[in-house]
Image (cartoon, rainbow, N blue to C red; front, side):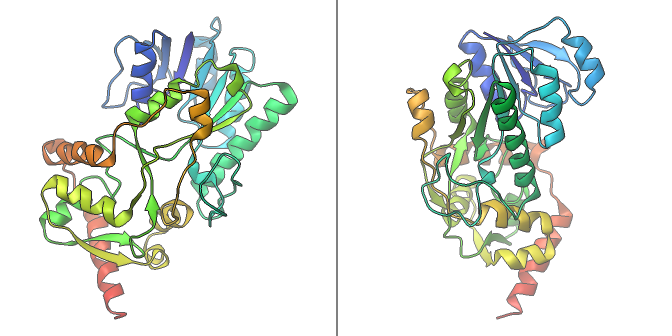
Amino acid sequence: MKILFIGGTGVISSECSKLAIEKGYDIYLLNRGKSFRGIPEGTKIINGDIREVDSFKTAIANEKFDVVVDWIAFNENHVKTDYALFKDKTEQYIFISSASVYQKPIPKLPITEETPIGNKFWAYSQAKVDCENYLMKMHRENNFPATICRPSHTYDKTKNPLRIDYLPFHRMKSSKQIIIHDDGNSTWTMTHTKDFAKGFVGLLGKKEAIGEVYQITSDEILTWNEIAKIIAEKAGYEIKIAHIPTEFIKKFDDEWGDGLLGDKAHSVKFDNSKIKKLVPDFKCSIPFNIGAAEIADWYMNNKSAQVIDENLDRLMDRIIAEYSKQG
């Protein structure tokens, strides 16, 4: 198959690119060449920017693809552009949405693809909902061959689930508290990017996936307290946790608060039976204790990654101090 990845060097897409190449697919990347992850060996590069539509049109004027995947579409205008560009150039278009699109509070667990969508708390998720709705409308009305993919919290060694990057390690090293929202007992699911790739690459070229939605996540469930303690253990630090209510955090930081209210503060459990039926060999084999060791190793032994967000560090101190005044 001839496959175009728009992006292809991000946290999730890099491993999908590598696995697709291993499977023998002909992978083209539309890429600006700015990711530190580099270009996976064996890919063909189309240098360009999807946001510069005229130049991109010229670059693909004589090209057609079996599959097009847009890893970097975040609003309705982005997918409208994709529709105009690829409606006559591909047999399957895959949009990377987000499992955060589901209604919050979540009506019931486990979450399936039929769980109602419409996240009123987080603009990021609302924009993804708009994208999904537009693409499904184009599928129904114009037979656009769209497939929707909903990853949840997918990570690699560079993505610390604690806020944010190296800062939690710096705070632990300095014997400072780490903020965990609410009581830390809400459940969460994180999926290693290598595991996600197994399910995702199985979607490529599947005619039965057109017009369908698939969530792809691990089945492992951990509390946020457990996640924090595992990361600390792998780094060799003692962890001190400050449990702060989500609404209190939002008073100080809208972006952080919206991400919690719209996603991470809600307990999740995903039913992955739909993707497993389509891709029978999809199975997540990297538990978080292994992934956490990779994260700790990356940040503890990579000087270039040891960047301290001093503004956020001070904000955390302030949030903890203000909350402690409430007794």
